Image (cartoon, rainbow, N blue to C red; front, side, top):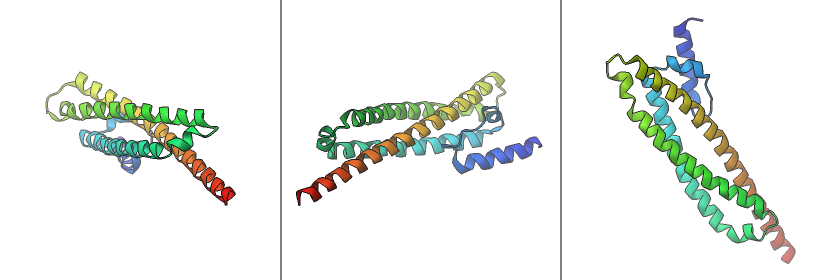
Length: 165
């Protein structure tokens, strides 16, 4: 397969979903500056959305605090709440890191031949692909756990109401 064919394939794959599709690290060197800029913008958009979702999760937990405290699964729910806080911190850290990375993109487009700096930028981009992908996977798992927990709380409430009738 020719290098140009690989670039086209990687470009198509990266446009589908860079956030959830971990890419082979060795292919990063073929991303051009425009593609890397698109990745960083997509990541920032997704992470800012996740930041808003964290606020929703906090409200959800506050709404069901009494039910969480009164349940036999309190330690499990406490673990989920702690994981949300940890996820918020990771998300904020990733946002800051990606913003810095995005601002450093000028190294790739300034027209000055800086092979060492450009290679470092590509390595950092490769690392960010992995970090964002891992965070996304962990975040989706956390989200699923939280919604399952809230669903169980709602089921228990409904059962209690039916028993009281």
